[in-house]
Length: 87
Image (cartoon, rainbow, N blue to C red; front, top):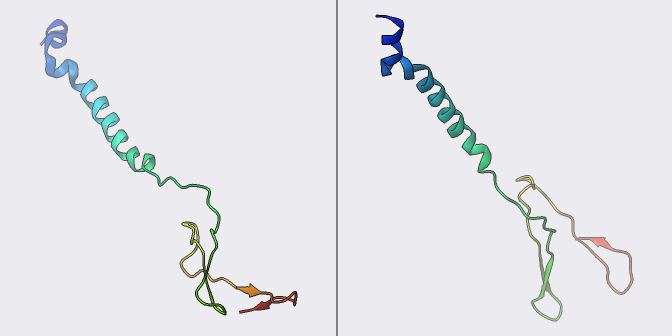
C-alpha cells in the first residue's frame, strides 16, 4: 500500500481523529457532574415566633444546607429586663 493509497483510505485517515473525538466526548461527560452543583442562596436563620397562648410561644428557625447533621442550638430568654437565662 503506497502513501497516496493510505491517504485515500478513510479507515487509516480518520483513525487519529476518532480517538481525539472519543477522548473529548469522555472528558465532557466526566465534567458534567461538576457543572451540576447545587445553587444556594445567602439566607439567614429566619427565626419565627408564634404565640400559641398568652403564656406560650413556638420558636422555630431555618436549618441551613451547610449545617452539620448533629447541630444544636441554645435558646436564651429575658423577661422584664432581667438577664437572659438558657432554656
